[in-house]
Image 1 (cartoon, rainbow, N blue to C red):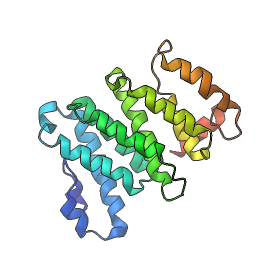
Image 2 (cartoon, rainbow, N blue to C red; image 1 turned 90 degrees about the horizontal axis):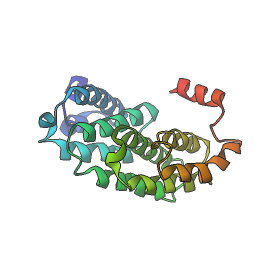
Image 3 (cartoon, rainbow, N blue to C red; image 1 turned 135 degrees about the vertical axis):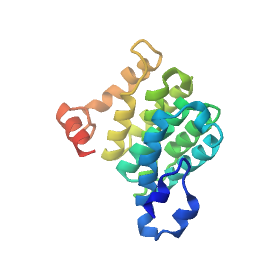
Image 4 (cartoon, helix red, strand yellow; image 1 turned 120 degrees about the vertical axis):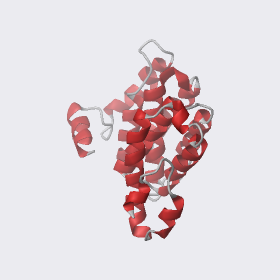
Length: 202
C-alpha cells in the first residue's frame, strides 16, 4: 500500500483506506518522495497541480506533524514555491502567521505551531527577497512569541530567526534590539553545546 504514496500529489483515496494509526507513515513516505521529485522538477512539471499541492501541504500543518515530518513539509513547501509559481506564496505565509498568532498554548496544538515556524523559516531561507516585506511581520510575531514560549518553541523560533536577511537589512535592527536579550534566558538555545545537541537530536 505504501507504494501508492509515490505520487506528485497526495493520494487521498489511498490514505482513507489505510488504518488511522498508519496514516502518518503514509504521509511521511509521500513527503519523502515529493522532496526528491521537486528538487529535480521543472516549472512545467508542477504547473497543473501546484494549487492542489499547496492545499495539501498547508492542510498537513493542522495534522500535528512530528519533527521529521515537519522538516520535510517545510522543505517541500519552500522548494515548491522556488521551482513553481509564487501566486499562493503570501497566502501560505499568512496561514502560517495566523497559526503563530493563535493563543492556544495546549500541548495538542504545539506540533502545529512548531510546523508553522519551521515552514516560514524554510521559505525565507530558500526564497529570500522573494518574500518581500512579509518577513517583517513574521519576525515581529516570532520575537513576541519568545517572551512566553516554552523551550521547544524557543529552539524552533531561534533556528528560524537565524535564517535572516543580510546584516545590513532593516530586519537586523529587530534581531539586534529585541531578540538579543532572550539570549540570557535559561531556556534560550544560544550556547554552542545546546545548539549542537539539538541538531544531533534531529
